[in-house]
Image (spheres, one colour):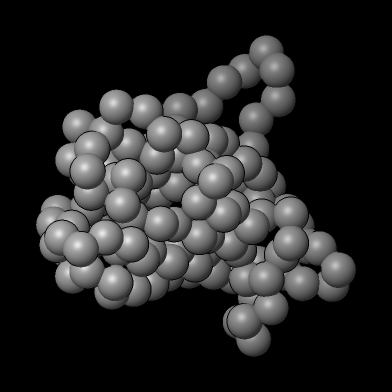
Length: 129
């Protein structure tokens, strides 16, 4: 199964006065075929300092099915994660579906203001098959 990942990133306490309360993950099927059973997985680890280590634990799993040129959004709210936690957003599915599914994710506050340092465009995701 192929996948794309943001890689692990830290949830900031705040940025430009914006306190994160939601992780927004936008998906767009940029193809002419139906993308079925695309998994959107979010993993979390509490903040840790060397030499200790914490495991990334799955906190959310959503199955998404997208028709051609269709868009959807998956949102994960606090208290599923907290400032200083580490998150990893993983998109899994068949290689064709993952290559054709464009992803854009970011942390935002309750008013919808995003934290610029947590914006991940599709090109920022690491692809592996």
